[in-house]
Image (cartoon, rainbow, N blue to C red; front, side):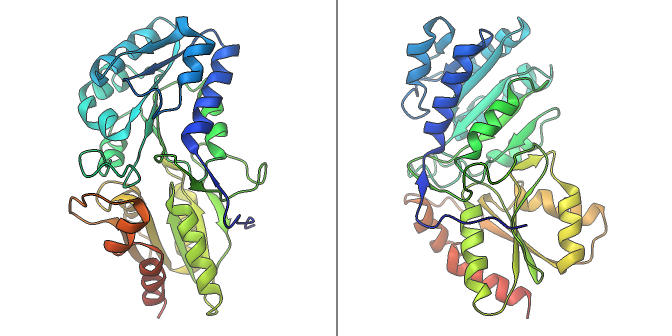
Length: 318
């Protein structure tokens, strides 16, 4: 079944993340929180105050931070390392791959400012991160589609046996999609946010709200569009993709990431591997360095904002 979309409501995922980490750290003495001089950006000041002996500020040294997190995990602890996604995935790529994934360590990376939400320009916009991280063996990759689900995601990682990478938006105020308690989060299982029979939008992160907005607009034209919140990119929900293709014959992916390597590529791989017969379109950041601007402004500029999404869906089902 579909869910109720909360138009006009917003919340900050990184604030929810920081509050949840503090709660978890206060009751579990094995949890450590690390940051690379980004306590405010990652909203973890409360953790420093609540359990200072298990809070580590590595400074502007992401490689060192992930190396320390790996060491803490080897000693039986549960480290949560926080920084911007562009730095977690690129500056510290070797440590992420070799120190953490190679040893299948229970390190959790909380990566904020995903996609074009950072407003810091192309040096701070994480446009390649999902492709980089998705390629690493042993990694679980999560991009929550609703700020409220961030709490459930974090709680689910406490006893997860391997590494987890959680990509969040900048967190100044993201659209709230679900009512509290309305959906159940489960790693690797997509959420059907909205039913539909003519086409399916598969989205992740902040684009889930835009997908629902587009589907609601098209409903007024008599076009029925299903929305899948594909919060887990790895392991991806192959069953949901197969069902979407067979039910509607038309899939559009929508992501705040390059169309190469991220959600669109992951869905395309399933379509190819399963030999599915369906129309398929990927929408996201084209192969450019977008520069400065806020997310919605740049989405519109590069053709994958709300109006671009609606137009692409119309073309698919002609």
